[in-house]
Structures are given as structure tokens and as C-alpha cells.
Length: 207
Length: 207
DNA sequence: TGTGCTGTGTGACTTTATCACTGAACGGTT
DNA sequence: AACCGTTCAGTGATAAAGTCACACAGCACA
Image (cartoon, rainbow over all chains, first blue to last red; front, side, top):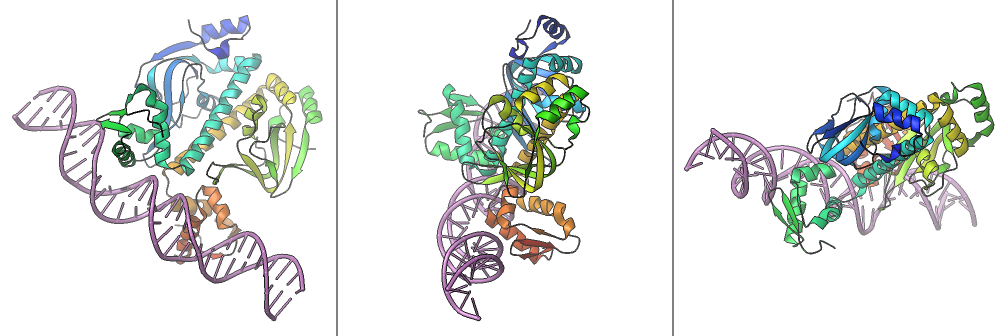
């Protein structure tokens, strides 16, 4: 059994249709949900875990575009599902995840017959568009030190995180050296302590 | 009368519904279709002309996110239409444009009753997402001189264009000074000639 | 104990962003 | 034609970020 809120309000017939035509997959941390170029097998409804979506530019550099968690919909897949084009980005599982895969036929029936499903899809699309617009703004105009500190602050609750400078560089779409230097500067200022693959926060890491 | 291809394949009853509930507006060059914060009045179907969508960051800097032309759909509006949130970006008419405004109720009916309308909406969303992902990649990793040259090359057909350095800076999401310097360098290299508000291309502007 | 791989630190240099200011070009007035 | 205000463009100085090259540290494993 599984649960995803976009399927909550379906009438009984559609619900049965959905339950019998959806295949749930379990993917563990570090595995790839899809790669750039892959064809789309169906619309993934994320049941739990977290998945990050990132793309790699011609230069070979990568940047994380957004994350998906419980109850999210992989909106990006819809376009690929409709047009048959391959994915342009890749999705990496960060915490063990399960997803319900909605095949094309079922997707069409749900879109046809359920207003609430349609609403869920539209809202998901809207959020994704918003996310990307904000990301463009951030990448174009914000200073890297601010962006890094903000990223760290969000994760500072745990006291320490396990991440390499290279991974952090991909998060923010910059070069590893830039991250190394900025982190070193933060360490000098006593806001954190660095060790191989690990960042430990000091004090409240606030300000 | 007006024409937009997403309405092409509607059954007769829906077509009448659409024709009687859509209001077409004409907006001239330089006017604003919507501003950041505006509530959404309906889904604009662009009939002709061109409209650029740009956003302004907290820093006050702006960047052009994408353009819409004949037969495009202002997908960004759907999210605002559904959630009631205001626009996050602003839309400026570049060439006199006409748009058919689809109000919420009609939009819902079309989504409910026309598979081809749904398909059109989904495809439009997919393209927009793709555009924004490519933009993120470009802003994050590409050098400004390449981006500028590419932008100019696309428009070099006319022999000359009328645009200020400031406007060009907004196109690419950078500062006016950066554009001025890069253009000056291109002029030194004999690829174009600059004058107030105008850029004249020399030779084939190729290479 | 050595060997290899991954991760980190850093100097040197280029590109881009920001700040501050100058002057040129244009439109409208007298 | 001379004046004035506004917009547009050019440029030096400096800071931030990206790129290249390389040294070395930490860790796994033979």
C-alpha cells in the first residue's frame, strides 16, 4: 500500500484504476531515479525520502535545481512523458525514497476525469516555475558568500553535516575552490569547524 | 475575431463557450501586461506581437526570463490563477500585441472537457520549465562575453538594432558597465559599431 | 608500510561585479 | 543658436568570483 495526497480525493473507480496501474519503486540513497537523456517511463509521485534534481551544463559543471520530498510530484517528468523527449536533468536520491510511477495512460485518465488531480498537477507546476525563477535570480544576482551561509544556516540545526566541498559547489552552482575558500574564511571567523567531508557548526551559527 | 491554435480542435459547444467568454486585449509596445504583485485576471493567450517576461531581484537588478510570441500561452499566469497569489515577474510588451484572456471559469471548463487543451497547457509548461533550466545553466556557468555575442548574433540579421546598454544588461542579467565594456571591445575588434542607443553589425558578425 | 584515490588548501591570474565619476548626445526651451 | 535637464555611454579603481595548476592530507586497502 502507499499514500500520496494527490490521489486522496479520487472517486472510487479512479482510485481502483490508480492502485492497480501504479507501480511503486523503492530507490536507495545515492541511486539515480533518472539521468539526462533517459526517456520518461511515467510520472513519479514521491511517497517519501528526498530526491534532488540537478543538471550538468556543457562546461561540465552541475547545479542543483530543486528537491522533491514526500507528497511531491516530479513535474519535470510530465513534459518528457507528453513529448517523448528525454530528460534534460538528472535526479539523485538523497534519502532512501519510494515513488509511485503513473504510466502515461493512467495519467491521461486522471487528467481527464479528476479536477482535483488536475489542480494538484497545476499547483505543482506553478511551484516548480516559481522555484526556478527564484533560482535564476539567486544565481544571477546574489553573492556567493551570502548564498553559502544561507544554505548552511538551513542545515545548521543538526550541529554538523557530512558533505564535501565539491558537493556543496554543485548545490550552489560554483567551483569547488570558491567553496573551499569561503568555508575557510568562515572557519577563521569561528563560525564552524572543518574536517574531511564534514562541517561542524559552532555556536548558533547565527549572524 | 481572433485565432489561437490551442483553441483549434475544440468541439463546437466549447468553442462557442470560449469565443463568448474570452476578452481580447490589445497592448502597445512598451506597455505592461502585468507587474510583480498584480493579481491574475485570467490566462493570456498571446495572439500576436511579442512580450518579454522579466523579474527584478531584491538587489534591484532585473533579468529577462523568457519571451512569448504568437500562439504562446502565458503559462506563468496559471499558477497565479489557481492559487490567487500575485505575479512574481513582470511582462513588458516589446512589439504591439494582442492577447485573449481566458477567465478562471472558462479555463476550468476547458481543462475539464478538452484533452487537446490540456495537452497544449502541459506542453507549454514543459517548454517553460526547459527554458528556465537552460537559463539557470547559462547564468551559472557561461561567460558573459559568449552570452552577449550569442545574443547579438541571433539579432544580427537586421544589420542594426536599437537598444541601450542598460536594456541589454537586463537581457543578460548583468550590470550596464559590463555590457558597455564588452561592446566596446567588440567594436575595437571591428565586429560592430556603437552609437547612442544603437548597435550596427559589421560584416557577417560571424565568428 | 606503501600505494592510490579522494578531498582540501592555496597562489596566480582572469573575468565579472560594484562604485564613483566624467562627459557625450539628445530633446525641449527660450 | 545657446541653455538646460535628462538619458546614455565610457572608464578607472577595487572587490568578488571563476579558472588553472599544483601540493599535500586523510583514508582505504593491498
